[in-house]
Length: 90
Image (tube, rainbow, N blue to C red; front, top):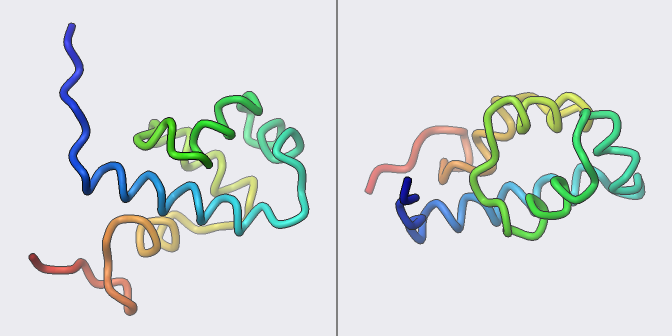
């Protein structure tokens, strides 16, 4: 099976997700947050650095829960939405 290359928008969304997770993690260690979410530290590292820009929904949900973020907040900050959480129109 051949994987379709990611679009620039998908890569940018992955970078925004990584930045959000790093900011929300604050002083907590990557190992602590990953363990709380039921993930490996390497998986979290890949997401935070943009090397895994399209993690599975349940991975994002687990990280959001571990970091005290709502999925609405994650969507608003990462999916190319406007300041009020409305989807940007191209």
